[in-house]
Length: 364
Ligand code: FAD
Ligand code: UDP
Image (cartoon, rainbow, N blue to C red):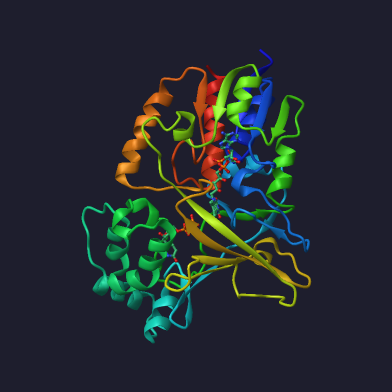
């Protein structure tokens, strides 16, 4: 055997696995069909020298000290708390919905208790809560649901709120206070020199060999190895034998505006009701970079293209379970990551899954 492990995919899942296995004296060949490491969290400088995220905005946040401490081995951090406004009518309002959102939208001046009473009077109780529509109607009622969630969800997923599992909309909380941060996690930071630099340091180990622009289909012909860690889409691994597992894709329209120093007041503006794109992100808010000109990205959801999101709904989960049953019978292949586990993982959750997975492999 030339390598102990072949790792397919150099995103968060693959990079963390590679590092952990290498530190446990395993030899690793890490491949990716793309020409860069980092998976969807890859960042790079655009033609004008601005640090951008080619696959859409990535903001690191976690409550898990273990994950933050682990990644801190490979990067310093820049404190950053993400804020998002939603364009509703001609207003820009905080999302998650909070006290300011409701007061401004309806011309009210309610205090926290007043907002709690407002929500109680307008919510439509649902029990049990099964779908994303149940989640939103149960917490904020129909008008806020229609203004902030219905159109955005239709665009983002090509599905109605009622067709998606509760977990999708449940990512967005509702607040009665003025907290306008998108996340409230204990640790909210961006890698000081970017994600790609962090991945470079993670992979800087004598036991790791990296080959880019190489697909698993070719690597499996050319190389010898004892065990595979697979982080790509699980249905592709099995040749789609039970049918295609739906993954949602995006088209990213990047733009540099040379004469604009600040395009929008916060990192991201969501467009729930207008335009074909869901949101615009201005990178300088995330990275803290300043200077002349600014770079933004618009996200256009697509059915076809690179897989980015698992589409959480009961029938897709049932199909995933059939693939998962095959994967559980494998002795020399392990599946980990957002695409392989078909889970709506944030970055910190992928790191945790990868650390746990390697811990299990090493202790075998
Ligand atoms: P990926 O990053 O998808 O890596 C998988 C890699 O496998 C890819 O590079 C792919 O090219 C490679 N691959 C697949 N098949 C093959 C094959 N056959 N041969 C060779 N290589 C292959 N998370 C957050 O915590 N905060 C955020 O703000 C955030 N924003 C996001 C915004 C967008 C638009 C998207 C799409 C995701 C966002 N995420 C965010 C989620 C985050 O991107 C993921 O949790 C994380 O990057 C997943 O890592 P992964 O290694 O599992 O998968
Ligand atoms: N969502 C919405 N309106 C918003 C923000 C979110 O309807 O202004 C819904 C939508 O279905 C979205 C989901 O909540 O896909 C999760 O939002 P999040 O911002 O977590 O999505 P991500 O950053 O993962 O694309």
